[in-house]
Length: 416
Image (cartoon, rainbow, N blue to C red):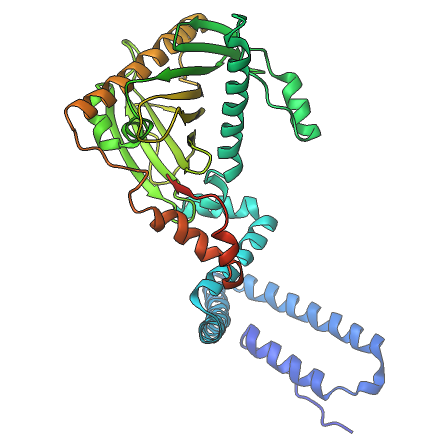
């Protein structure tokens, strides 16, 4: 019923597949599924045997085979790219820019949840910093604020009784957090002064300590103290230990910043460098400021043989004004831990950190007083373009129906 097809050796994979497709289209459908499967297996075996013969012919034939495969792949890729461009053009005509970004973010999160490790590897190879994984989340900021609230409650409760006040532990919200809390070591008092208290506790599974300072200043405003701590250019002037301090990259969504900080260490130790991400938030409704920092890896800041890279570093600073941001007087809570990668005994490292934290805070305090008395110009991070980061970033993720709901919440300014 059908004309017989003349068999001839195919000149390429593509021509052979085309001839196979033509033969399959002419096949009689009444022959049944089993016959089609057996025919398909036979053709696959023929293709594999043809590949083997091409490989045995020599390097020239292999080169031509690879060339044919490359041409075929480039043809298919060009079709896919063209189709993606057409889809993008269609979506740009249908949806607004804000909706397109929201849709793209959801698709990216869905893809990243299934291929997280592959994405990290690809980002490392291509030199891209994955903000989705490294940015400081809102939960981290809120956790630091909750710790400040508990510290204030404990401090007010024991202030009149004269009993030694230890940093309180947060109540675990989940079973996993509860298991972690049971493994944490208790706090021990290191220094107790009138307006300055320093505690430390051993980090489970290590020889390192986590430190916590609760203090008060009455001669500077919270705004001045906060701005001096954040202003990288001014810190290069008042902190003699700084070798290098610069912003590497900034996240538009959350306002987080990646910084590279190189600092002197006491002789004979090498200088240390830190690559860390930081984010801060100013909650005017609840009258609180918070700054959170932690170490990250960034492809644009490779490790240098001149310095020792500190890969474990965390810092949380919470400031509670006594009255307002522009009136003298505030309490602060600083929690700090890092691994300076030293070979000295544990008690030496503990002594350096225990003495270094009060020294740093005093230098920060004196720099704030100097900026206040000498009217040194310091960047105002609280009121500097608040809508560029806080309101606009949130508005970009809100739908028009929810704009009215977002305006009812407490005013919060968020930056790096």
